[in-house]
Length: 328
Ligand code: FDA
Image 1 (cartoon, rainbow, N blue to C red):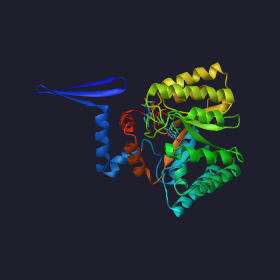
Image 2: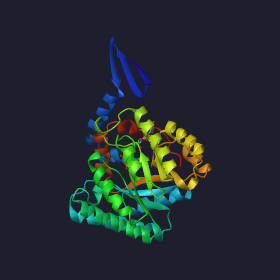
Image 3: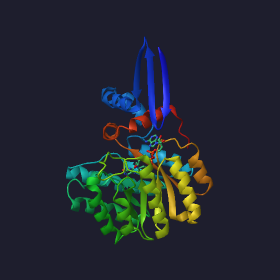
Image 4: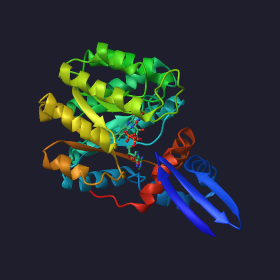
């Protein structure tokens, strides 16, 4: 049997030739096979995969990993894995866990803030529960010189998340949310939202949104991303570039030069475990701040499976990460 592997225009083609039969797999088919087989794999095997992306299960696991990254000059944002929690007691316990994490970060002299998903602390229950828990975290963070980042989830949550953040922002500055460059509404949202006190993370967006609300093509998403970066620079906002796209990062470097942006008005952010081909060290050499998004928690299994089902394209990143070295 002869096997050809061709990587062309972001697609991986695997061709098997045997006894005059030609079988062609594209990465899409492979993605689907991976997604169907992952739930059948023993949990131990999935753990091996998840270990590339997740700091551990217990709070001390993530605190230890944070110290390791801090010692290498990276700052951290800690995320307790989980989302879409509809039980009020659980939601309150999760909020407590975050408060304890903030306490430990302070006590252990670590450099880490918190990233939290709105539906993990009450948005699926009602606006009031989310807003109350969000304020609890922001207030406690304020007393401990820390910061809370509210992740952005799928587009059904965008309005509610932005509205609550806007309200809280009237009282507190040690908090911010995330905007997704793939959403067609984002540029206009930010035109109203951004000022010199705003602190926001810009990512492409991870959920599988419809073409009605989201750009689907790589080139359109990147164009929007860079348009938003320019808007942030013009408004003198604090922007966190959350991307692993090296082309995009190169363009961001050019815009930083073009607008002569001060180093204290931006930072680069990456997900723990994603290989960056030396770019993290390059950022540090330039004295640019780098923050690693570090997820942990007992829900690592459910989280990995759900993410894969939501967006099958992640499968190829998982596969890739097993074969590449992480360099911190
Ligand atoms: P793109 O998908 O084009 O990937 C660029 C390159 O990076 C590719 O070549 C790929 O190989 C590599 N790569 C990307 N992701 C990888 C992975 N997981 N493993 C291995 N390689 C990978 N989304 C959201 O909707 N709401 C949010 O709040 C956040 N928060 C967030 C925080 C931080 C710090 C980051 C880095 C990302 C997010 N995201 C997010 C996820 C984001 O929206 C997006 O889905 C991923 O970052 C992938 O998009 P890239 O910008 O990296 O580009």
